[in-house]
Length: 508
Image 1 (tube, rainbow, N blue to C red):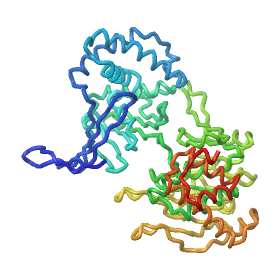
Image 2: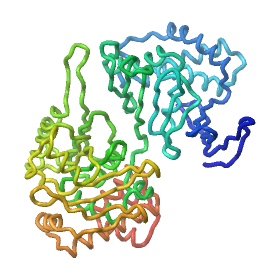
Image 3: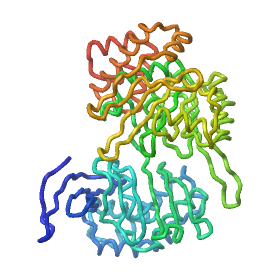
């Protein structure tokens, strides 16, 4: 909810509140204001009602007493399956300590202070409340000399009013994250890639490799995963292109999703995964768990593992790819193709009848082919026709939007024919070429004429427009409508044609 309320800053000028909202940080209320002032970037101002500096100092003195009171084995702290039990132990003891030291506090205030204490001890302290703000994509610490920065979905990069005051504090947070997954960050190993138990990706570096100080970069995990409805709502994709991709999924054609850094490749892969029929087995392979599929699908999520401190126990993307093909998957989802051997196994899987969907860093359809056919991936161009289509994601940094830049079919011999392309001036996705090989493939494997392909795309786009109108947004609800369409298309179309309200009970 935006506001236009001016507030006096100083004689030099005024600040203007451009956004204001509340966040529940695991039981602790947090107020957020985004303020536009004389600086070049907005200020992301985070406050916890009723928690002043004096209270924080008292609570910090209780941390040692709390650690003494709670008897825990190291295996409990690093085991993600025991996280809730460990948290409950700390909550019980924290409540008792607060009753002892703060006699006049209300139960609600004790709960808030207990949440703060636990986040200081088990979480990331001052950074923890920001990890609960769904409006943020990134939380970054560049050094102890400057404030924490965040990347806001609406307002872009913002400075915050939070500072980690010492380099040691930054190091402690990074080391704590590493310990929980069996990694170390030291002067001998000053670079670390890791993840939080909740799925956020973390990169950390130490001085002097990072010249200005120790750093932490946290890529937020989407707790409300992207669906095709949400992408259409954001105008990222048109219903017609989404419907054509749906038709490709229905007929088990393999696709590659490419794009630049933070263009939304994995989010898009998550959204189109809802098009997989519920009677098929899915194996996903990622470096860090990001995909979330409908709960009723037969889905085996797998993640890679780096070497431990003894240099053992590594499980690579290639290991998982080879293993996944022994699990009789109908569909294989791959987080990102990076190396030649991974790509070779991937394309071999396509040639042996598996439907494969993967992401790749490339700026457009032509660059995608260039990346696939040159080092380090270096796949022979003649092998590329096992891919049926390419989807290219694009992030326009100046406008702060993400769009499907191109949808292209793969031609024989490894060239591409771009069928749809985003037009910046009109902010629409326009058809620029007719399909050829894709139509022939659908004719061969699905028995569809060109007219039947058009009819199927029109019908599916109608379903997608209905889902958009009636706000069928969640992963499970989106998957439910699509699963019911596969089983009883006439029944779904009768609901869509009558423009009935969405009711999940109707689709089970």
